Image (tube, rainbow, N blue to C red):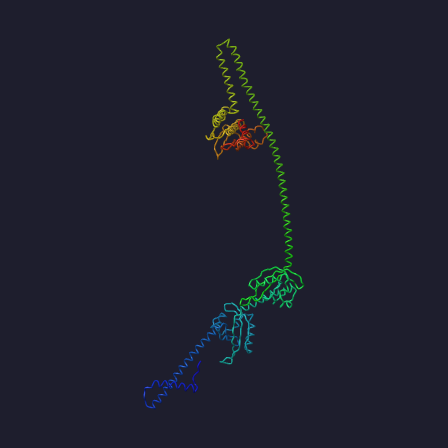
Length: 598
């Protein structure tokens, strides 16, 4: 900034410039000498004042510009600036200081800074303030400060005393910097240092040449060397000769910025003993990100290795034990299966014995039934046919004698003899129908059933109805025989045992099969009791079932006391199997055909 011109040289220069300006103005004007000289002096003095005023204005503008610049530098400095008196009252503050404290600058002035200091830091702050005003030079203090919004931060206070121009009182300048990050870093570093010092693992620092730079108590405990023995020594002191290549590999990875995680190897202790260790190595970088060293953590896993070996042996033993247990279980299962098989064999043997016994019983029953049928036929032949034929013979002898004596009664006697012969023929036809109805072979199933049911109604008085579908006649002859015999035997049982008044026979086509149903309104019976009864009367039911099963059919009986009986025989609609093949019951087609005809 320029000062006011007050030296002779400056005044001379100012007068010289004023005179030059005046001459320029009045170079064309003429006046007398006295007046012109006085006017000249006045004009020179006026010009001097104008020039001086212009210079003063410039100086003031420069001063204001500098003041604004320095005010901006003061307000927007990277640290907070406060002016405090001896009581700690804030006299001045820049904008950065107000922002750090979280209070508007206008409200911060004339406020005690102590109120913004955390209680735990107030003793240190008061001691700092006393040192600032009692001593010369800069004083430093770290204090926890609390913003108006309650957020706290660590601040570094740098203060120095100043003398007031306006009076005898003292004041000081205090610069505040936010060092929270630094404090947190120091605390973290302290925690890390504590962890390193208290860790049971060996934590070793070394440079890129393998020279040890740090050695914690955990390393002393594991390897037996003190820090004084190892710091400055090579890491190869711990590595067995046959494992030196491992260190080169680890160092190569670290130099490339990579970490080595849980590398299991062996290292040598001070006593020369080899121990198992797990090594983790990480690069140490400077602020520029360049790798300058290696941080290595080594954990003694000797006991774990031993435990792992023992665990593996236990696992092998456990696996062997499990195999033995599985083998025992398998053998127990096999033994149980053998016992079950033996029991099943005994059951099958017993069932076979029972079936054999039943077969013998059925054979005896069949023989008895055949014998009874033969007796009945024999009695019929003896009592009916034989007597009729004997009567015919006697009648013919009488006719022979009477023919010569009395020709008038001959014609009448011949008529009576013809009646006896016709009666005998009818009896023979009845026997033939009962043994094998020719209408079944000649006309088919439906006419045969109608003929049988007609004679059945005449003989028993039981009303029987028949319903059938015409296509049943397409079934082959063996199946016709089966259906006819089932109906014949079922209706015979109705007449013998059911005490029924009505019976229904229906033949329907059902899902590719022929289903015959014989239903009566008789007294009914308990099916299981009758089927398992050792009596000859169940032979008819078993015979029906056997016949149906011989053509691969299904035979069922539904009955209950007082609810009548329903018999169902369901056989395939298609053709029978090829001749010579075995069917249900173990019969060939030829054997089955012969049985069905009987």
